[in-house]
Length: 178
Image (cartoon, rainbow, N blue to C red; front, side):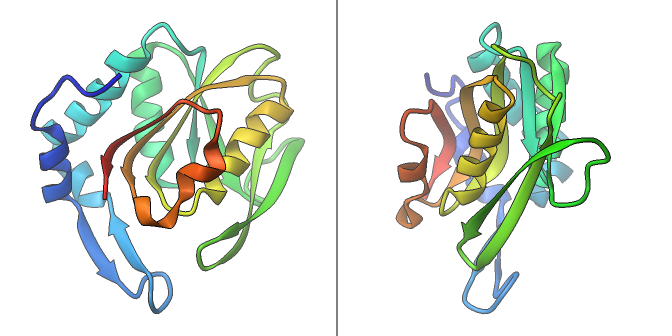
């Protein structure tokens, strides 16, 4: 499925900004935060995902940190629960944990072991797909809990980094691919 809002992609591209050399030299960070300041645009992004996913998911998992923002809003609109997928050491109960490679280092993600139930359909939400390590790790964590990944929703995909290749077999939707 694609967006039903014909100008949404162009508006998202116009609303994002590039931050050179962040978090390290040579990386151009795609800053999503200006989209959050524009309430109307932010709401259109959420509505776009909600129209595509309504009735298809039981819970939304948002990836720290920007995936929390959109994920919680999407979960609210869908009337389903929200699960935070966090960086190592941030969750207080028993967790599943997975380390993975980033485009500029390594990281570890965690999810509470009881965050989702066996057989639940989970929508994974994040802002940007770059090399795919974070999203692939999140999908594996959801599956370790016994749930299935119903879909992955993103605002931006950096196509030249090949992150989608790590997500073979998943329903991936990127609002904008550059």
